[in-house]
Image (cartoon, rainbow over all chains, first blue to last red; front, side, top):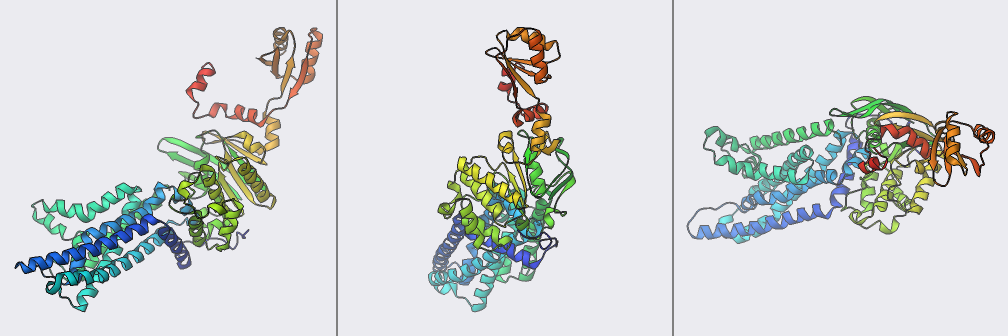
Amino acid sequence: MSSPAINQATSGLSAPALMAATRAETTKFFGLRSLTGLFLAGFVATIALSWVLGISAKASGDNGFDTAMPAPLLAFATLQFGQLFFAAASALHITNEYSSGTIASSLQAVPRRGVFLGAKALLLFIVNFLAGAVMILLATIPTALSAGEYGTFSFPDMVSAALGAGTYLALLSLMVLGLGLLCRNSAGTIVCAIMLVIGLPQILQLIPIEWIQEVIQYLPTNAATFMATGASEPYGPLVALMVLIAWSVALLGAGCISLKRRDA
Amino acid sequence: MITLDSLTKDYGKNRAVNELSFTIEPGTVTGFLGPNGAGKSTTMRMILGLDAPTSGKSLINGVGYEQLRHPMRTVGAHITGTAGHPGHTPRTHLKALAQSNQIPASRIDEVLAQAGLQSAAAQRIGGFSLGMRQRLGIAAALLGDPQILILDEPMNGLDAEGIAWIRQLMKNRAAQGGTVFVSSHLMSEMQQVADQLVLIGRGELITQAPTDELIKGFAQQVIAVRAPQASALAGALAGHGAEITEGGGNRLEISGLSLAEVGAIAFSNDFELHELSQARGSLESAYDQLTRDTVEFTSSTAGKAMGK
């Protein structure tokens, strides 16, 4: 039995505690087929859709419609759907704890809420970043092949799209983690996430008021596109990154307050 | 050591736990008893930092649970219904817990063996019976080889072998100087294992006392008498201030008089006796007596049967 004197105190975020908790989160994440399965499905869907989008771009081009876009950006465009798989996995990573009751044993092991949340956020950020970047690199190949001369791209195009996709999915996972802590319920969290990335932009588009149309440009999905395509209008990649970070900080912050205030 | 200081929990207007103060000493098994809904689980959850008290505090070895650097190495706890995610295997579940508290991985196989789960270590928890989940929860509690064990109804769903195992485990821990705090709503479970008892009802402390003292002090001394003219004898005894319950077969249960007094009354009134004996007060009857007024959820059928 360990001595209480050695095993005492220290508050705040200590690096070893965060690393230990992150290792635990990694074990939990990769121990569930439902989560790794969603990641795999996201990969397959994105790569397959990129190929289809390439075919479509070629057909349009051949018929005289200019839809030419660098192949990595065509691949990135498929994230519109692909992101849902990753968002669902991120949602389940936190809501599973509440639905299965393991939140109690998790918080017994890591009682400091900041460390617990930090570990979950760190894990989700890393796996989503890697998945997004690798996925776009892989998806570029079938897209370039199927789009032919309409998908010509440069190396910077590819790097920008891959980093953009990685960064977007990573930050999106933090937004979803925040939503998960607010909802504590799988279905609710996934519906909120879908509303945020797909529902809101489409619904708001129907409202013909100028400032609302302006607001749409600052929703996460739009910001992600501006970031990955290196746009200059209405704002550049750096501002786009800031917009995405602001969304993550706001939602994760709200989730963090909920985790600290409410009983487990 | 676990110390509670005026621990209180409100859910809206409903007070679940009301100013609980007591200390659980090392070297003992302390039973935490109360009817369903008495606030046992809520109290344990507050001790473990899962639920925040409305007021008051609870301390583990003098500090709050959240201040413990590697809590599982100090406190091993099992709260019912939290054994693990259905999609995980026991090994994955325990591995994550071990990693978070920097507990050597070798402990995983040790506790799996202790809990008798080696053969099920690679199966998914989703397919487990209640008893296996309990075993896994207790295995998780033992993972950090902690000084303090906090177990919420650990015997639920366990088979006879499992109950014997957990009983022995708790006694051994206490004998080695550990602190064991175990909740139950069944007095009979606790009578055989607990040195100390903390009784609560409706969130309030009823009493804290050594188990044998509680049996002696609180259980009424009941005297059993069998006599052919039982009802006439009952009348005579009632005249001397006894409380009498008439059982079947000319049997009376008497309280409020000593064995000698009952004998003397029967003798001086010429009653023939077939039995005159002291029925030892069980912890069960002491418990019933103490919690009678505080039972939160009395079933309506029980109420009818009792003629309410």
